[in-house]
Length: 196
Image 1 (cartoon, rainbow, N blue to C red):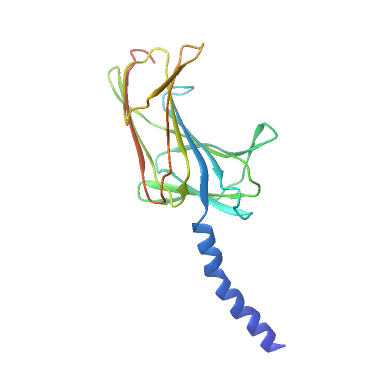
Image 2 (cartoon, rainbow, N blue to C red; image 1 turned 90 degrees about the horizontal axis):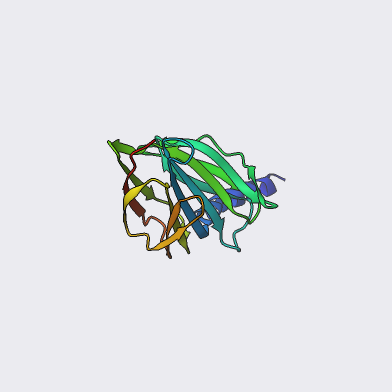
């Protein structure tokens, strides 16, 4: 009996590094980043919609980094055409970042939303966005919602596609991929807006 117990204990200890390695090899199938400035607050609303690869074993932990000064607004998943709140571990701060961990229990789109302050100098607004992750992403899609009264928009890199909508806003988009684990995606945004 002791030999069986000892065998099971040793086998489980050998399995733990394998499970940890499997976790770090999770692949993001599609990462959709939406940046909506001054949407319902004076800050930037940042939204990540994340879909993992179809062969991801579930349940799986998904770790998402957000800036340390961000205010988490929502953590949810798409279920039957609506977003349902998903429980997540309290964010762990590490320098300029916080990492929040959520458990994915089905293959669907998961969403993390947060607000972050923008720099304002008179009528000029500036925002620096950075995505960093330990996961490979097959496709990254970035979208910036230009407010109706914003002018002189400059983005680096250029968001080459423009889609005006009836509310007076213009959506600027960029699709790129793949993005390797540890490879950053940065976006600098500047525009003028003479009203709040």
